[in-house]
Image (cartoon, rainbow over all chains, first blue to last red):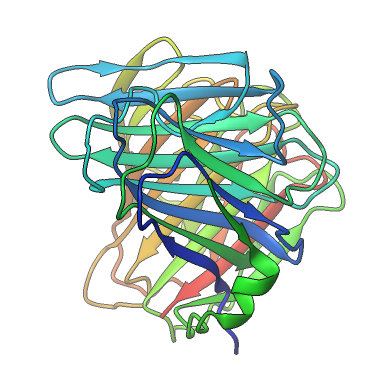
Length: 162
Length: 178
């Protein structure tokens, strides 16, 4: 029986890069899973956009622990899926983010994701986010808020079978 | 910017082996207060449940029972963020485990996403444990861990919501992890 976890793309950055885009995503899977291990050249949050939509169509709720405190945030009307609440501090690719986009190709529901983020020595967090669109997701762009990914950052996109 | 056209890359990537196998998917045609996966084969190492759906009424939770055991053999602990605060608590000696809905719960409009990992489900030498990551944008994000005090292999899983129901279109998927 074929595996239900299908690798779709796996890239490692050879130099500092402003963003990574996965395009022409087929709609034959149930969910998508994005595994990223990154560092930023300047401290900034990690963000994701669907189908190049930069409109104020995203919302989220978050939970963060820093080693000395906890916090929870949330809000709507933002222009991206936030994958972190606080900015990534690491300038080497040691920060892990695992994101699940559920029912990404459904055309009768908004697109929800849940994500966990780990940056040893700084923060651990989990977020639930929504893109208020019933369009199937056919492209994803992941990018730092106001920075670039450092060389050596890796990104793997998987399809989870229906 | 690095742009990856998946139609080209995917064909050159090695296959993922059989690490994750879809066992069953249920998509509700009408509202239902529970979904059961039964006759689960014992041939995998772990199980994973993936859910995306809504509830008929705001505030529903996402509950788990194994092997139709409705006795008070379950415990759950959680860490939850509501958008304004973070809290942690637990419940012991319950008739269910909670994967979501420890605070404000599911929603009629914003879809809830739940991923549950059940470890060593077929092992007859230990109690069964699960952990979940779940969230709804407008209500809460939570991490839960649960235990079922039984050495019996898990052969069925009931996913239910107290008092209310899952909406039509809600999707429940069960995967085996090799």
